[in-house]
Image (cartoon, rainbow, N blue to C red; front, side):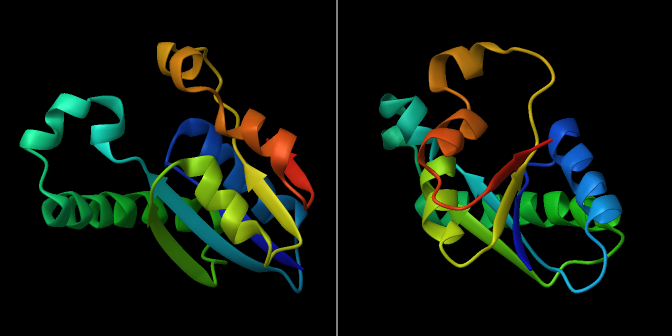
Amino acid sequence: MRILLATDGSDGALTAARYVAKVFAGDVEITLVNVLRNPVEYFPDAAIAYDPELWHQQGKKYSEGVFGATREALGGRVVKEVFREGVPHHAILDMSRDFDLVVVGKRRKPSLSRLVLGSVSQALAHNLQVPLLIV
């Protein structure tokens, strides 16, 4: 079984990783994905000061920390780690075609960003063509 585990290092994502480690034993291939949005999408006026190369470098550095925490929660059972930039649910939908299951963590607290931007898990639930597990 091939599992795509979307992670942002949040408590919900790490809970999902621990759940995967506990429930899916044996011949399971786990790929982690961390997707960061471009800040210009949130603040168009920031384009003046936006440096794509610096954003990419800092994003990769941030993702390394996210992947480290998630690997630890999984007990080291990760096959591959993928860093993407863009809209999270679009990137996950695009990658999902190669997997048997997509796993995401649920935010435990409502937030202003969820109201404004929407929920990644909600968007996946409506559009994913493979099974989705929301922990």
